Length: 108
Image 1 (cartoon, rainbow, N blue to C red):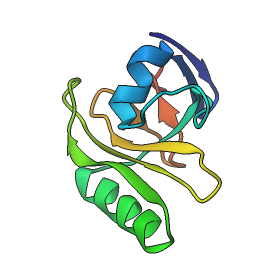
Image 2: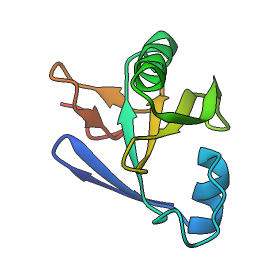
Image 3: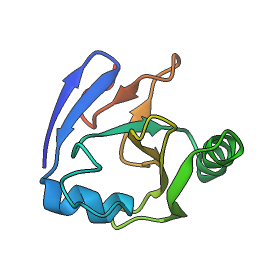
């Protein structure tokens, strides 16, 4: 995986064969673009709040919130347009006062 900082946004490139299973989305090539959006939040509780908000609004929850391989906590869903989203609390990534994600070593 490659990551690049761009102000409050990070572009992370994952292999499609790893991203689909991580999000709980079958990759048959026809129903998923291979692209996902990620929204980082400050706590595991916020992960639950966002996932429940998505569920309430009709999203398909593809991965219930749970511990992650990187020591964080995340869940995933597909919105009403079929776009994949991961909602994550990653203790290795900070958030600044405005909620922008900051890669380790890029603080301040």
